[in-house]
Length: 314
Image (cartoon, rainbow, N blue to C red; front, top):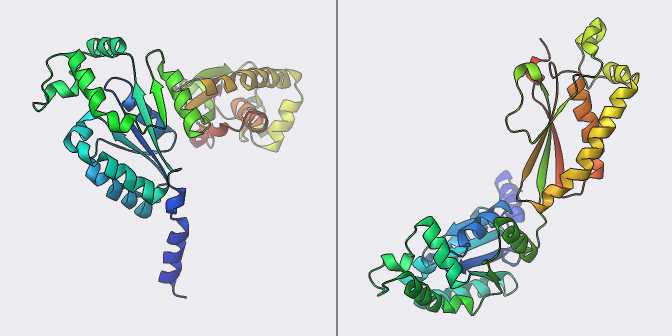
């Protein structure tokens, strides 16, 4: 078998089959939260296409899934897309169902009470899309909302889930979307050691100061070592207060980091600092990493990084 044939077969193995591709059509009344849902889906790993002409969607979906190994697509369809090609929606929808399967193509439809939509447009000072189109004879916002609802009828009548966002905040909306698509919230926990003399990390959510602990720097034999070396680890083992502080920080983080799963967060940075970022903070970060990576829920992925590593040789 030639090298070229092997490469082609390898690519084919990586390529998602049509039966494994998920397609979500996201639509709804203007001001009801379609853009927010598309942003949420993008954060959850979906490839998002918004406001593409309906007639181009099947070909675009096929190209992306076959050429780019994309298996999760979210297609945004709003009144601007539908107004130009409304007669084709049923045909396009049936074409997607035929290609990917009825269990793989779903419609999420967003709506809200008319009074809420009016208030949202007033708050943002936006013009309803239909009011900017000459082909629609709408003279005010309520008539535009009514006409839009009628035009979106082919989509809403086929919706697999209808979400009323009238009383939902962004966090609640994300929970609804996650529950529907069956994806657990994933958060990366960055454990970052640093040296205070180089500045506090500006993106830290929590900062722990371990400069109160005994410092190996004052031992000439340990000065050239780091918090990952066995000799430094043995040094810290002599002092009960080191274990006490490590246990206190671990207890706090193990208790409260899982609470971020209920928030609209994707990363949490825990910074642990000593003077130079070489001994105490490195040891504490590595020790916490070993424990937290075992005890935290699987939705929390723990990473470790030593910011001052470039300075260790100096």
